[in-house]
Image: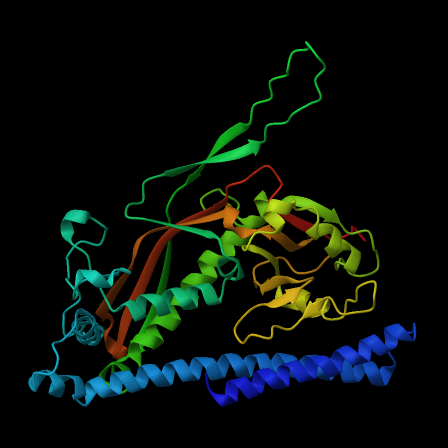
Length: 419
């Protein structure tokens, strides 16, 4: 990590400490913030947002620079020279790296390509089929490409950042998970009395394979410019596009011809009682929401808060009973900020604060299962936009998602008051 990123993170913490002192002073004096203090607070919040953007940009630039250096070293023949001198043999990853770039440029024709996270299987093999079939062989690209694509997919989906259970299957046949709908209960029983039988109740959650596709076009000049980090560019574009489509359904999907989203399957934990706040959760609401989730789930490592960005911005103004902010910036670069001591993740697809809106979620996200089917499929066409000299690419991923524990114990939401 560069010194620039570290200094930005230090600046972020300093700005927050200054802002925190303003609201703590007003709370200690039992008064609202003055117009000047409110203006200063808002400016500091804007600066925090700008610093966050800069940190993300710096970290992304550092990664791109490293990838570009690696690509440039390969281009100028350092690895080739070493192999010629007998000092090293080309690895599967090196072979795959050369081949994937050739495929992007069209040197390998328009054959479909599938992306699989399995670096041990060797260099790329092409195939004429477009569906996954074990007898047809796999298509392998460098592990870093697969990782980049999924990283960008996760980047735009807060739910995928919150530690759901990921299940990857080779085929798209229906996959059934047993789900608990009611737990066994016990009761005080007198001597010689019969013990009542109360069995746990189970149901089935069926995960299918919905298809999500992304289409993008790249200029021929970009493909021919070997110094460009083409792999990273395509991974970012495709990953974000698929992530926006798939991530939205993981949160708000109805379960009919799309994943069964978090909003539809969670249980109400707290209904807001404070009117006149536009439906926003207050400190007491968040405390009650946290403790509406039972201890085993609440203490899980996958226990997170999930809300939209603007909702999280409002959390910065909330104080606890000791007039301390309940939102805390992370002291570890790249780690989530904290709300009431638990990690807080932003998801743009969670409903915004409004009256009667489900705007905050809290619980054990490991109980939400995301099913991914096989590899990501890439295909290219030189003919689709022949007149404009653009090369067309499409990326396809198949998946589904659902909350497995339906007892109402693991995942709760806050719903704003009606007025």
